[in-house]
Length: 214
Image (cartoon, rainbow, N blue to C red; front, side, top):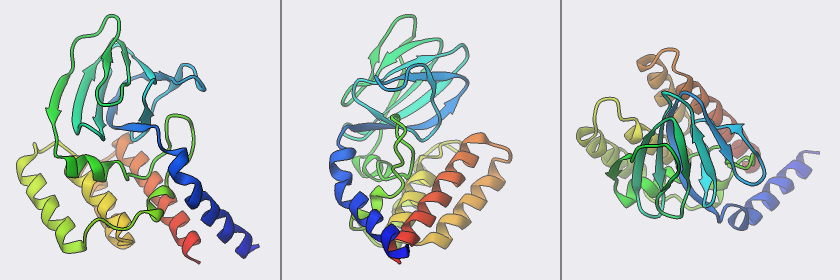
């Protein structure tokens, strides 16, 4: 039975490039009610750290706040509801009844690393194993150096540097460092639902990666 699961993981990893080809953006922060329509799920609640596809449409409720990062353009958008937007390949398209977003140009390095965040995509497929088929893009010292540079430049409440470092640690199989950083974030933001989602996703990702390595 153990060999069966091992080979199942291998097959999943080999097939992953075609499954994830349509991912274009990551939800990096979400407050309030937002629902998604992607042709498979209609009016389904959106959660933080969901990967979005070109063509997805989002409906933001009153007083909602949504932050997304596009992988190709490294464009960060912060939207406030109510209103609708459509996900494009490199930026969103404004729908009805919504103001223009606040935008920020991130580094391509950061956007690339964020694309490797373990998550459940907008079509309900588990993406946590995908990064195991990708060779690490750097080493531990480089990742930590990049993080410190990002943290100095970022605002105090901007979690992108921590999202970068978590993904880099996971990619480098530094699982204890992933857990330690998540514990630190949990202490910095007690009771934060986004941190709870992040902890759950990484716990599943680490468990799946260890099973695949057996």
